[in-house]
Image 1 (cartoon, rainbow, N blue to C red):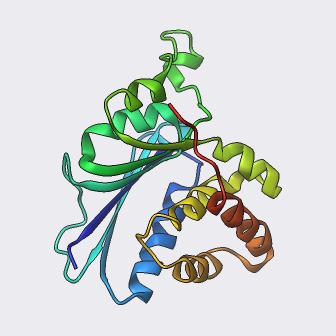
Image 2 (cartoon, rainbow, N blue to C red):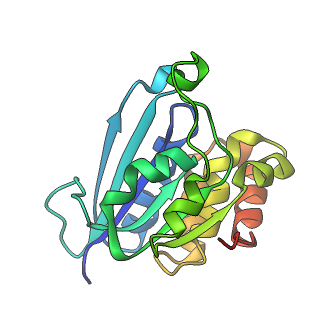
Length: 195
């Protein structure tokens, strides 16, 4: 099997690290060699966080280069735009449509760019976008946004759904299992926006 490259991008506190752990565990349970790498920006201050998950028969490096990502999971539209140069020509970009203002916007130094996802779609990117935050809120906990996106990922053929569910259950505390499984289901059944 060719190595699969998944890039997870978001803002500090959105659960990108837990997501990489879930995906890594699912890949290990399927018998793949796995490398996970985490790149922290100002994550404690709401800054960008990037994690890489690479899996295959044999993986030598945890880093994904420009134009190498088979899939980008973007927890926020602006983070999707920042990561776009890493996506392969035939790669898939899954994005949450709910924006989070970065510090320069909060401080008034800049304005949040308009129509970020529409501009990405106009480039011919295979974009699958939906309001994952709303799904997380419907599940009962907005902190399950990451699991909503993992639920949608389960429909794309990168992992067996059962492997993702098992990894999810192994990675979250038992008291949070039900709400996370509900978020996973909501993500699996999400309808993506047309651009």
